[in-house]
Image (tube, rainbow, N blue to C red; front, side, top):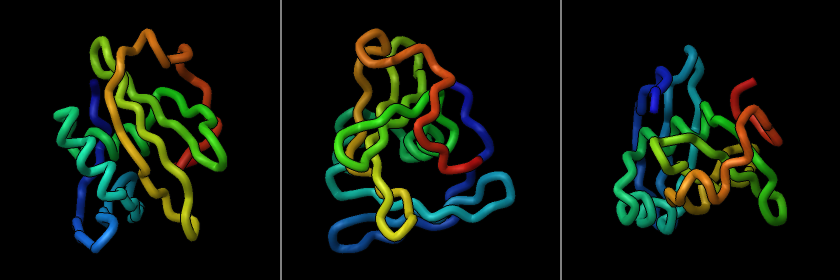
Length: 117
């Protein structure tokens, strides 16, 4: 998986979420992760910057339940599947996991949402 140019500037742990401030394409972006999402990142042995990369530079984004989106990023035979929604216009990651690419990937180049235009 090619990781685009992202730099985590800060990581602030709050009671129920963690806020990341990220520099990408000369823009500062704020992204929040639930405690559950951070736990899943550890469980699936995924790096935080890989999840942020999947969110900012997805191979595709599909519509999830309610007002949620699902960003997919290919990682070998798997995909990083990042479920997120917006809260006060800030991307808020609900959960993350890395299932088989064959199970969920829909071919790429579909974008129901883009955090960066």
